[in-house]
Image 1 (cartoon, rainbow, N blue to C red):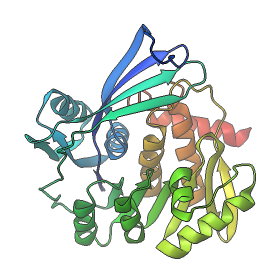
Image 2 (image 1 turned 180 degrees about the horizontal axis):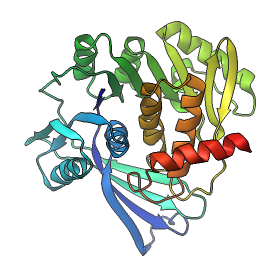
Image 3 (image 1 turned 30 degrees about the horizontal axis):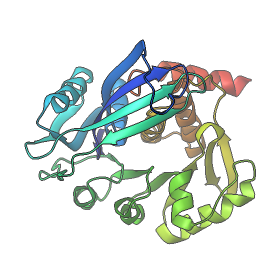
Length: 301
């Protein structure tokens, strides 16, 4: 089976602090992590680490950070044929403050105002495709050229390009922020009845399978006409950077293995939860064996 992850690639520089810094102050940190990042990029990295034949398509600058991203991909076996280097724009940087006190992360991104788009559309045939809402034109072309592929949209951020792709894929796995912004409705994680109308609006408008991620609470889905929240597992959060990206990558992995959808979601929840226990998006990827073991343990308990 061949997988394609298409979309955003960046380079993350994470600073771990004991607490969130005060404005107009200096903070010296002793722990930093630097690695590639981005939703589709991180998903491709996970899939490669888990033994999949996966390619990444996206645009980076022809610069130091772009070359670092390429080298990282190659060390785990990601096909970089469609990793495009631009001389006209820089690789996007993300500066992340990971608050050790509560496990939250605050992200500052530096995006080149001259950012361009892919010019070389992946021409190979793929069985599974993951999109993150970036590179809309390329995404449409890839979906058109792979009509039998199973496709997933990581709808993390609410943008016109992401919305336009929703009706074209088999699965829209969206964040609660995307769901709320699109429907102009608010949800309460503790009251499933506030989530159902939001889900129904998304389902009606996009006519595809919808799942809504609820961070540490789990994932909302409909299964055989029953609305439910598939819970995550309790963990001590250190850094939540990339947790959603790894959720989506693992969701695609387990879906491709023909697991029932509810189990796919449960395993993806566990993957995301385990990732927040370590610092750095890519350094926090759990092994496939660790995820499966944790699922068995949680199922028994």
